[in-house]
Length: 630
Image 1 (cartoon, rainbow, N blue to C red):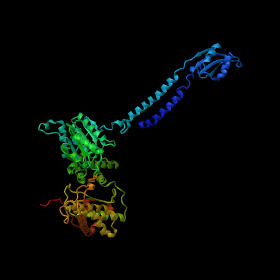
Image 2: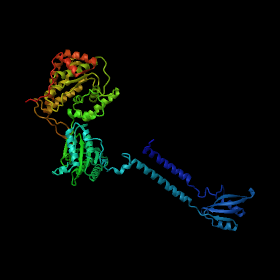
Image 3: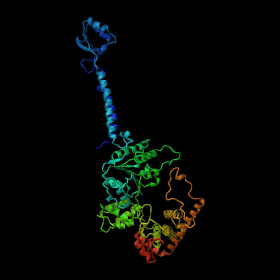
């Protein structure tokens, strides 16, 4: 059984104290003559001793403790003159006693005082501190290996970077897929380290820093591991948050220590993950002050490109918040390159799925291209999680290989959450069915809307029913007609409730849909210039930062009059789309009723089956790709 150092510390000190007191009480004798042969069990008063001496009954006297104690051997007529040993406590100053002993011709002997008391006292006073110090030494030595333990009290200023002469991460560039542009940039960095003469021969300089920028889960840290595995040079890795502590000056000291070690092992690589934790914009506070994080950033700026420089050290940093970084950190000479690691396109998703499917048992009918087409916007981490969830479902269902059924369920779980208990028949289930069919009907009959993939009444997460839409391709640009189609699709559920059950019976189920409608309509007006009354101006930025003294203190971006017009335009766009949606639902009431009956019975309908039923009653427009006007 493994005992922690805290338990040892809890018991060691009390045991040492108890042992000390026991030692003082038993090991050190209180009387230096106790326990020897010169002991006497019976005491005699000094006056009676003198009487015995005068009467000639005393035969021998042994003096101890400098004449303060005497052991007297005397005979007593009442005991048949048998000799007995008696102890007598003598007065302090009795010089005449020696003369009387000589006069009475009594044998006496003076025993010098022994030093046993001093020896025992010295030993007892030394043994306990030695034991205590030794015990505490081992405790502190043991706790020094524990993060944050007392043994690390003097190591606050030391860098916590993990150092490897040749980082065996197990990740190579072949294991990184879907981000080919970023991979090429970083492969060049590795070549700089391995064969610098190829570049210096033509006057090129090794870049000092590379900043990896991208949303979470796109593979920034994975790329750093691949660089470490490929480079074969010393590799330092640390998180930005590990620089900053509650103690003043610790962060700057750790930066100095990190670069000192790196210069001793140059050429090398330093990887700083989540650099925004220490590299945020300076001067964000109101009224100034000595911000410890800012001092750490200042030291980092100086070490990266200061008076001395850091030849042979390449810094690679990763962040998903480049907008909050200080401008001095981003300039050439510190971070010469900014590599964007974005979400992969459909080709990249296929490559990522191939990497993560290497150790998975997949059925023969599974197509990774179909999975990639169903997962637009998924990052590499999302795709890895998707295949892992599918594998878990396969094991739970006791299957030997993952099929498309597990893949579909895993996609639904990743996007919408865990599957809930199916609804029972009743008014609530029918209302939800009409709501979801309303969404799907608009998505099917409006040309510019993404096609329906699946409609289900099985609850997932907070949603009681779901309608899935799958775009035919990755869309980086969205047209005005597509935005209006998406607004109409979001309003389809509310419109179906109003037509079927009446305005008084509409429910709160469209709350999230209305938030999406408002957001899309406002962006059309304030960012994309798609409003006739507001015109071709952008009134809002893509992101609103909230730096103290920065974003919160800025003046309004437009006047109250413009704000009123914006609200009116947002309302007009939403209302116009709602009127068109109501008309489509009203004109297709018969097919909607049939679809609801089928959906209540089956609980889940495939998009293709849905379109075939709708085509029996009305013409379904063919979904076309967006073609820009000439």
